[in-house]
Image 1 (tube, rainbow, N blue to C red):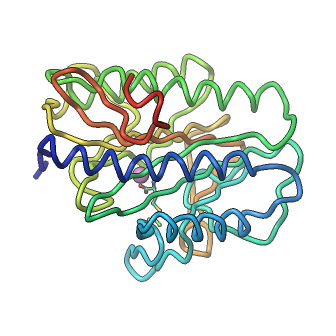
Image 2 (cartoon, helix red, strand yellow):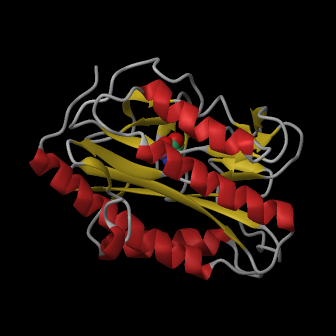
Length: 258
Ligand code: MF3
Ligand code: CO
């Protein structure tokens, strides 16, 4: 069942989203060769408690697996759910940072991919195309459009750029839980799927691979990597569907709506 949020609830989610945006911006600015993703995680943990929030990810359970950090940091061929580690980031690495908090009962969830130092042309393009695919999806998040319109828009940009869309991880409803109905695939057919309504709040999160779309989860139970070793990028925003159009709840203050 898809829970519709009132304007008051969307306001609370915007407050949670603002905390996510601010912390994620600081973490992204820290990414450079020599820094470890464990250092980014500690920084994030300190900022969460300063903001008086709770981590949305730490101790999150899927089956027997318990997520051990407040941040997901996925490097190069890691697609999503990378566990922060003591391995230093290297020049040219693609670092995807995925971060969420709960503030006063409501969740925000967002991700960005940043380049450490300088990188190759294909990696730069992968990051740009992935960001644009998310923006194309957000543009479809209006009453009357369907979930398939969102997925198709993401897929067209990603595949049009020569890349592929991960199938086994998808976006999701979000609100009083990190993951609510419905699932939001980053692929699909226009005109198909659930109709979107004002009051739905969805986390859209394309994961786009430079090579094939296949992924597998490593022995740690979390880290998803590309099957073919190619690089991957990930962007995510929490977006409210309103009669005025899509409202990005996890944007930094001055660009709070599209
Ligand atoms: N944005 C990711 C997702 O929605 C983050 C989840 S990390 C987890 O799946 F630890 F909470 F699983
Ligand atoms: Co998410």
